[in-house]
Length: 507
Image (cartoon, rainbow, N blue to C red; front, side, top):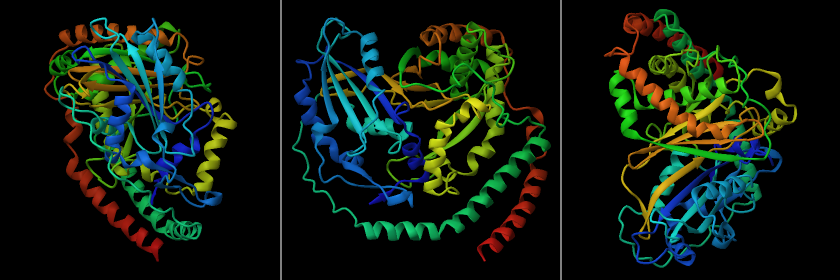
């Protein structure tokens, strides 16, 4: 029995009929080098033999009455693989465009809560790179309560193979569901967790105060602007109430082009370049729609803390950073340097507390109610958004991957939308390429099908601007490190004050 974190549970409470909270992947496999196509029955046998590497595939939710505590993951005694698989045979229209249209329809369907929260659709008869219809695709849905984008990529890495030779499919390992805990035990555990809440509040208050102060000290001592206008992101066409309609659009670029830009700009990261590409694409889109671009967009960029805290194998292990995308800067190369500065200024907030602790102050009953009220009262329509869209950059394997001899040639990824967030960008790298994935609600993002074309135009503009921009060995302002000793001294004094205050709270 494993309890969901507050962050994991929040994705359950946010889910509605028009906002399913699952992360998705569309994986296209080419069977051109295989002696025979991978059949659906072969895939089922293969998956059965690999279920043990992903335990949550056999786990379902157990809720606590009245939302007195967060749900638990328990073994599903009625687990049946057939309930999580579907088969689709494409006809003459078997290209990537129709695959994405099919995936967009499937993504509109919420996962059923009475079973483990995942589903795979096997799409047969896809046209391969050589024109043969022996390729196939997988449309994978995994609930955000169980994984984040980073752990989802890890799961697919465990299920796939790194050699072109098909592995021998072994018999499934024996598995018996562990007995579900009694209602009395679950309620007793929930009561104990509530009793510990004051101590969690004190610890969180200390971390939040220390992080905020560190950010303020760096702002004034280092003369850096705040990295984002809090609760003051500009309204955009995609910051409106969404419907159930979904569309997934993608564009692939060579990683080598992004690395060349990074080298030309100096001390910036590859992630800065990816964010700069997103920013230029969004700026061009807003220009096309006649929207105001004088105020910079603000992105929420999830950051994996898996390397910092190996607390569990799956679930959401993220921190988040609000980042000014500097879309008010007309030069797309100089904008990347500004994004880098903004990221440096945001680090004190991002490193302060993992995102799964941000909701610890709120009881589960209040968290569930507030999530519903947020949608039903259309709060997103009445106030400026905290941020305009999420942008996630997930590094994937840079070597080819296979499934029973069929090579993974392309992958597309999708993230959930919710009210006021009608557009999300997921960038995933694989085998020397970066795929920019746009998940959007077409009812609130007009002409969203232009985004993939704008990516290529934006990349060409950045390359041209970076080539003519003077090289800079360090993208940090020279005054950034001048007052570090003074800042550290001030923080040390403040830390002592806060520790005394927390000690009094605990007493």
